[in-house]
Image (cartoon, rainbow, N blue to C red; front, top):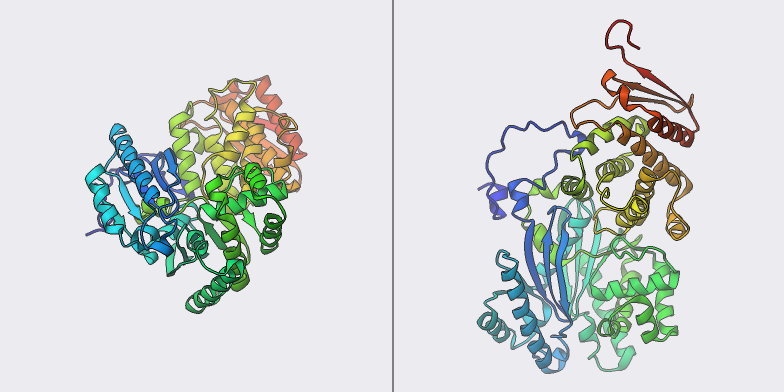
Amino acid sequence: MTPDMANGISEPAPALDRTPDWGSFGRPLFDDPGARALSHVGVVDVGSNSVRMVVFDGAARSPAYFYNEKIMCALGAGLSETGRLNPQGRTRAISALNRFQHIARGLDLPPLRVVATAAVRDAEDGPEFCAEVLRETGLVIQVIDGREEARLSAQGVLLGWPGAYGLICDIGGSSMELAEIGQGQVGKRITSDLGPLKLRDIPGGRRGRKAQIKSVMEELRGQLGPQRDRLFLVGGSWRAIARIDMVRRDYPLRVLHEYRMSIADIQKTARYIEQNDLEELRGQAGVSSARAALVPFAIDVLMRLIRVFKPKDIAVSSYGIREGLLYDQMPQRLRDRDPLIEACHFAEAKDARLPGFGTQLYDFLMPLFKSAPPSKTRLVRAACLLHDVSWRAHPDYRAEICFDNATRANLGGLKHSERVFLGVALQHRYRNKRVGDRFQPLYNLLDEKDAKAAEILGKAMRFGAMLWMRTDGPLGELHWQPKKRRLKLTLPPEAEPLYGEVAQARLGALADSLEAEFEVRFKKNRPGKT
């Protein structure tokens, strides 16, 4: 059995590939049979605090959320005292699952994959609940243990960060899981009872709760050993704390995925939570009342976690167990792809006027970035693929829409500063100058060097788009001599009519951004032609 067949995906032998050379990024895989099988998949997570259904769509390596609904059921509330699921939560969960099943049938989805975590696996009436769900809805619930929950959450992080390494911490209502990741693999995995719903029921008030957290965390350190790399935070309680941290810092980009915090930030936010009214913070941060009620318990866990493991930095992941379920079904060759580039290829194929031109544009302007590191050239590639996907927008607003899309889109594999880099580049694709003051706080996430590089990239795309003919036709050649500040454009004879006065003005604007002189030469077609 091949690895891909082991993942439940049977793939035909590859046909002769007549597509162009895709370079170091490789041919996009979103339209391959194995990837298409994952392009419209529904999963349901029956957690201790919430029940959520997600339908993934688009490029499987960087999926879009076609449908996303959450019901706060609190199945695990009171579990420590009664040993049973919360009766009201149980009723709400069955109602939610019945609704989700009807939606899935209406969308003509494959059978939903449903998993349940700590509350259902720990409750004495968990099997009875699963049987009732099957009877009432036809859904089969897979109850997973803590180590499997940790593995799936870690795989969710790998979906968004292919090269991620460090420690994953996934906090749910009734449990907290830790898992090591590195080199695309999940390592050691452990589970604990440090979920906010269980901590709420510990006797002795906050002192008793903190003593319990300290004791359990020391046991976890003993099992895992030193962990000094990045800490990835997965779970709704961590996201709520991150939202409050954004309020405290007046952070301009309210995107949780890849939001970074330091140990000092966490410590300041813990004090901020103690010193302010939680209901007011909830409103400012956009956190639900049910989630906000768990924040005081979760922040105590996080404070002890960073004290014990001392991570070098902290990143929030919006991807977790549900994305891990999708990642679990992927063949390895799809896992190995860059989620950003796959998503941009998908967007270009779906929305651009001339799909495939982005690769040609990238090759044309790469001489401007020949000394750039791979982390930068992938952004250049992404920008070129996205340069024309917003053409349907009103011309007066294209630059703004491009910036909004780049900075706030559901894209994996992007730091916040890289989102802004893409946004600025795509702004300059449609406009010489940056748009308005309302984006100024976001511009501040870029240093001066990267802001200038994004401007140059945008103006290069703006000029290159003027030479648009077909995906297999030569645009010409750019030659850039940075030490001499000389930019030379060589055009083939068939492109000469395209080099009109607007194109000339745009090339001049690019040269101005490079602080360079420029010249244009036309290749000879026949004797006497220059």
